[in-house]
Image 1: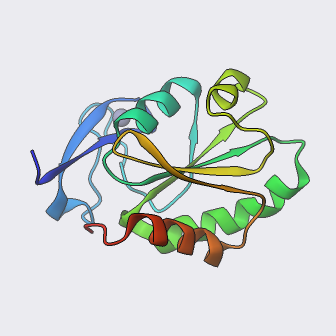
Image 2: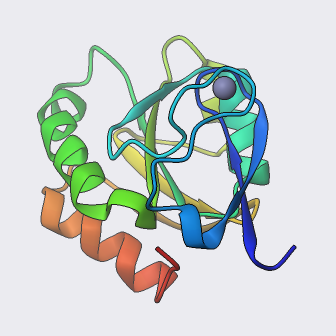
Length: 149
Ligand code: ZN
């Protein structure tokens, strides 16, 4: 299975296997038909967060935020810009820590915004505080190296 990547659908939570060669061809979920790689920031709930952070082969960057957090709201457009820039190289998602406090507790989040980069079911790096899009892209690239797609 080395030539496929496991990707959890951010809409329905279904795990999909996508051939690496097709990552840039807008793969869709076999269950609900939603696109798996959009270049946009997906909103996670606790269940999809757990599935995606534990199962995804592609780099997955999660922004832990809350509506009351000013710096979080300031960073949101930068995070969206980074998602667009990274395209099929990484998926970006956000989790509302106010709605899902147990998830952020489990992840050991002490302050927000906090970014955690996951790959192949493991945390590989984290970044604290609001960052511009260029910093977010550089953070992903420096921690993942060459990624197919
Ligand atoms: Zn789906």
